[in-house]
Each structure stands twice: as structure tokens, then as C-alpha cells.
Image (cartoon, rainbow, N blue to C red; front, side):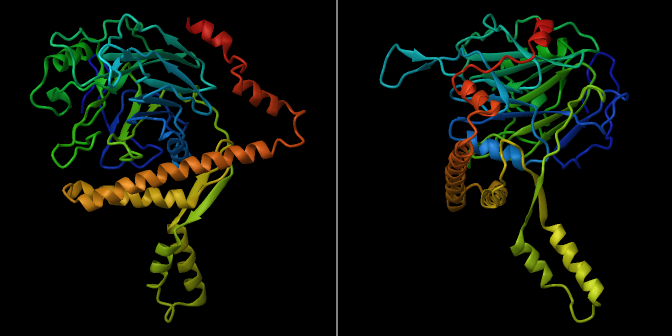
Amino acid sequence: MDTADDGVGSASATPTPRLPSPRTRIVKLTDNTNWASHPLTIWQWNCRGLRKKKNLLLNHMTFTDTQPDILVIQEAGGALNLRSYDMFAQPSITHRRRGTADESTTPTITLTYVRKDLPTTQEDTTHVNTPTQEHVTTTTLIGDHRLTIINAYWTPSQPSMPFPPLQTPLPKSNARNTVLLLGDFNCPHSAWGYDPAVPLGRKLASFTSNHHFTLFTEPSSPTRLGTAQELDTTPDLTWIRRPLRAIWENTEDSLGSDFQILELHLQISSCLCRTTTTYPRTKITDWPKARADLDTVDTDTLSLEAWSTAILATIQQHTKEIARTQDQPHVDSHLLSLWDKRRALAKRWRHCKHNTTLQARIQALNYECEEYADHLAIQHLLDLFNNFNGQLHTPKVWNLFRSLLGQAKPRHTLQKLLLA
């Protein structure tokens, strides 16, 4: 287990709110925090184009146990807003237009989304960004703790003489400043499961070692699924600097991308964590599996009370509880079943990647999930506008109209001034 070089404690497995899977890596760096409070949750994902997967991502966030506080996205392919999040971007990677010799575009590749109720400012990374390397640096104030996140994407093809990585001043190292360095770096090195290492990978490993970063990425848990001709790799890397208790996990959910969604839980302080809102919950039962298990119950020898208890226990075993938020007031069981089916097929495909029929079924399910998620988003918007009939005098309606016109009220002005 890796630990930082600045005198932090050793790693150990401690009780956590979630049961860690075999692919979860737990790193304990302090002993004075309380996991009973809600940790800060960060999702890291190379989406391979966010426009078609946006509604799919929003629905997936509703179905998970923990809503992400911060999303770190690579290869977004454009700047898109997400409900309840502030977006931060600084495009620099250029792409040549098809059919032209000289003209090029600068699409937004790297995006960072932060929950609106977390005061956040963006640092200028113009001096670090290049036509092949894009960085977005944000600083979030959580109580009196500053969390700096460097979101990076480096293209696979780098110049023959690559630029020195991350020549930027980092925040002063103390107990109230935490730095996260994460993204898709595309630079092989033996420290994260590649052999042999490339010069840029050695420079990145030297930079993180000199600045006392701890690597969270587990090389034995690939973050990108290769094709039948490729191996599974780990181009998505996550480092942390400063002593914090944290959990890194590969969720193994890709939502149609070949990159997995990575989840990071940070325990900053038990007294500084966000206050949570209690939402109504919906119960969804997988009735086909429940009925199959009920057929095995011995109804002849059991008493009426034992038979009733067995039925209730079987149904409870196949029932999920999902919170209904304001953005997602309805939980669609059909979309949930499509995801479960796709996840099962993806697990089978990992062991037989030459099965083209199975791969075609997975691609068809990806397309069906995207189309159905878009349909649900349109239906939700129409229902929202229908509810506005006769309510044009309420502040909620006018706040929405101002937001659509780009005139939303600024939030956390004083806190952002403190971050400057």
C-alpha cells in the first residue's frame, strides 16, 4: 500500500459506509475523522463524448447510492451544463477540421462540475495548457478547508520533445490545503501498470514523487477496457497530496464509454461535511427473480407464519430503494433494467472479447439506453412546463426563466472572495 512521503500514517482497512468490492482500494491517512458523517464524493470519467451521454449520466446519478459532489470529465467534446452543478473549463487542445488543411478548432475536452452549494473558483492554467495538454484547476472551499483539483487530459500523441508536465505553483502544503491531481494522462509507466515506460511517464512519476503525492489508482483494476486486439489499461490516474482518509473505487460502470467511472470519497472533517437533504424513496422490485426464488420455498412443511416470513424476506432481497430528487422526481424501472442487462453482458464480454455477437448486443443496448434517457429528459421538461400553468406569479418560475436567459443570481460571492 502506497503512502505519502510527508510523514503520514500507514494504510489500513477501516469500517466505511459502503462495503468495498475486491476492486476497491482503501487508503487511511488520518485517525481523527469520523466516517459516520457524509464524505465528499468525486466522480472521474472519460466519457468519450458527453452530449449523447448527458441524460444517461443524470439518470445514473439518481440510481446510485451516493450523489457525486464533484464530477471530473475528460473527452467531453463540448461544454455542456448539468443541473445543480457549476461548470469549469479552459479549452486548449486543437483539432484539425476534416477536409481542410490549416483551419483547426479548439473544442472543450476537459470539464469539472462542482455542486452549486460549494463555493468554487477557477485558476488560470493558460501557462500550463498546450495544444496537446489541457488542464482545469479549481479550488473549493469546504468550511475552512481548501480542496484544489487539477483535472488533466493529455492526448496519446505528444511532441517528440514533450513539454515538462504541470509547471505550475501548487498551494502551500498544510493541514487545511488538499490537492487532487487526476485525469487521463496517456503516458505509460511501471508505477501504474505499464511496461515499458515512456519519457513523459517518467517525468510525471518524478513530478508526483517530488511533490509528495500518493497514487490511488490500482493497476490491477483497469480503468479502460481494451478491444479483442488490445489489453485492458489504466490511463486514468488519481493522486492526492495531504493527509486525508479516502476511498478509491472502480465502479465498473461505463455508460457506453470504454472507460469506467471512478469514484473517490474524501473525509475532510466530520464537522465540515455538507448537510444532506432527505428525499422520498422509491422501491423497485425485480419480480422475475423474486418469483423464481419463491418457487423454491417449501409451502407444504412451513407454517403460515414461517411461509409469510419467507415470502417477505425473498421480496426484500430483490428490492432496491432509490431516492427521488427534485431534478429526477420519477424513477424509471425500464431504464434500470436496461442498465442491469448491459452490465451483465459487459461482464460476459470481458472473458470472450472475440464474441462479435455479444459486442453487437452491448452496442445496441448502449444506443437504446441513450435514446430512452433522452426521451425521459424531454418528458420531464414538458411536465415541468405544464406545472407552470397558473403559477407565473411564483418566484420559482421567474428564477427558472432568468436561468434560461443566463441571468441567474451569483452564489457564494463572499466565500469566493476569500478563495482569491
